[in-house]
Image 1 (spheres, rainbow, N blue to C red):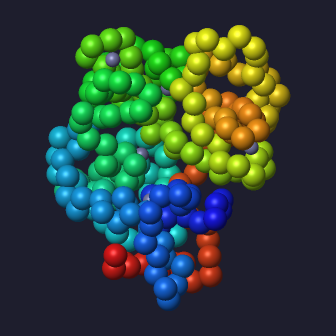
Image 2 (image 1 turned 180 degrees about the horizontal axis):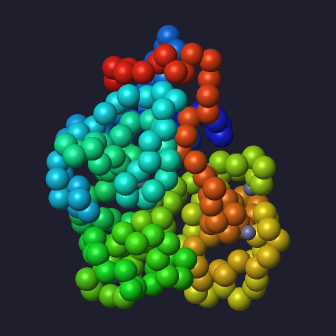
Image 3 (image 1 turned 135 degrees about the vertical axis):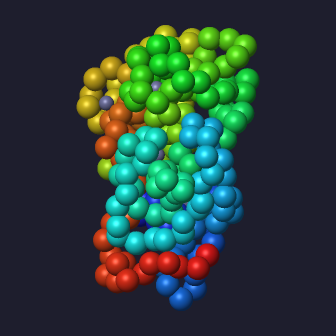
Length: 222
Ligand SMILES: [Zn+2]
Ligand SMILES: [Zn+2]
Ligand SMILES: [Zn+2]
Ligand SMILES: [Zn+2]
Ligand SMILES: [Zn+2]
Ligand SMILES: [Zn+2]
């Protein structure tokens, strides 16, 4: 069943068709990939060891890389740098299904992001291809491949990497302005709904909504 509100305790993102683990006694639930996150890792952007902390609860932290507030699991370094699990689990080469070649982290920030077509949203470098002129900033590189949002559609909305051969015009279901079909957007394969990336996930938060008892549920064993 596809639900909008079934959130993984680690990455605080929707759980849909991928494999997951859940607790039979409570509503603790994890993506399989989040349950298997490496405990310790050296990060491509901050060359120091990070340890995985599996505390979940209501306390918000700010990610040192994407600058977003989040709850859920985190990677922490000895000098207290904090990364969310999306940013923390990035490694090189970075494979992205939008591009056939592996991408590598680069501190260059003068390049344009091939996904949204503009300059960098954040000044933290980007992922670039060694073989051709292709770069992704962090924001676009980490966009979810699929999002459920019943406000716009009852079907899953998939990230589309743009189509150079589209002749017609696309209109965003949310803001009712044009969508550039050559750039990335979200779409439904069943009914053709199209949404700007920013309209669908622009104010997306990775914060667990408050539930009764959620504050006391910290330090869960996984
Ligand atoms: Zn997860
Ligand atoms: Zn982050
Ligand atoms: Zn390439
Ligand atoms: Zn971008
Ligand atoms: Zn829009
Ligand atoms: Zn649909």
